[in-house]
Length: 207
Ligand SMILES: Cc1ncc(COP(=O)(O)O)c(C=O)c1O
Picture (spheres, rainbow, N blue to C red):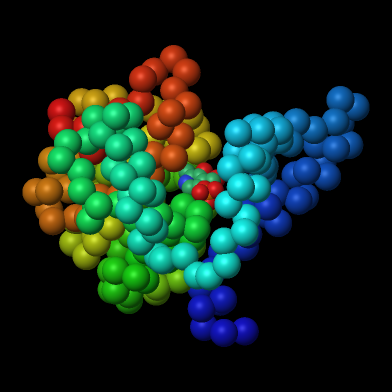
């Protein structure tokens, strides 16, 4: 077993297996929410765009085409209310899971650094901290964390798995705290467009 794999937690789906077996024994069976795999049909528009672009031999650039970057900055301005977004502010990734897992390593974090994330959270924040050898720290309120050695602070609103949406005032308070203590704040907003009773707001919004 390598040093890295020994640092990693048991995969949550494996951890859930015994509980699944118990639930399956129940007369009404199981409501299995453990893997959030999309089940809806892929919209025709997306299928057609994929087919139309299929004959594109060659390697794509990491930074994407100027048209893609325009689409990204445009969405950030229109949907998130971000102001003055330029191509240098966006980067396409192969999936946010890969980014979440590797960003602490790519930023040069390691032993002696801390990475904090919500107590009940998407498991990859912990994996990312452990991959680079940093110490994973959970929080209920991030502003109660000890900022010593804390290099990265993950927010996730709307939250997986709780669905909690951080109101604007809360974001303002946390951003101010992170700035005061020189902590890099990473806001995972992948469910931002899925507000139900609340209207989720981005940390990129100038307010
Ligand atoms: C909070 C959160 N962040 C990131 C991801 C990763 O999403 P993807 O790799 O599909 O972009 C997920 C997926 O479940 C998630 O729940």
